[in-house]
Length: 256
Image 1 (tube, rainbow, N blue to C red):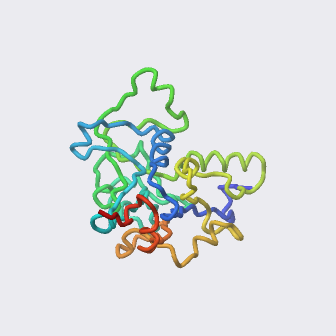
Image 2: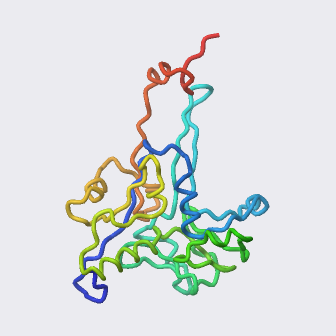
């Protein structure tokens, strides 16, 4: 039973593993994140001034020259750092790491100083410049479990904490522990390639906790020392000979 008032309760520590070998860059995770968390569409005008709001984004890099190049897709969200640089600079403590390792954002406490966004090395926080509206009938698609953010506050990914809380409350009502893979954020649920794996780091015997300790995983900007709870499986590039054998592949040789 998950009794949050008991000091002896073993709380989970949520984290995510992203397999770059499986990710195809389809952006299904980004679309699901936007729909689940009522993220506003800022439009091309604000996008031109770097005013986009996207809690989950796909970063694409191209390696190689000419026809011998490869495209790498990397989903990036809030890295849920254990040593988060965004937290100590907030003058009103609107962001903090909770007991389950999730870096949460208290919207009704935020005063919009944007210090946290400026101190985030991953550019995972976004400022709400305007009171965005959803014209009819688009307002019926909004998720009632997530609040609508108002103008002048920071917002970011929280591992869909509303889903985590709902699963934990259900486990409390049924007087049982939280089951393996009982909850997952919208991005992991929607990935057709199952490239996003979400789970508890400390769950004994769990598939996620075993994968989390894999030495082949890497983090973004390890030199910063933020100890993020989002890790990436290293990309395994196919050899040049394999690319040349695949018709119409980016690395295939074309005879004149």
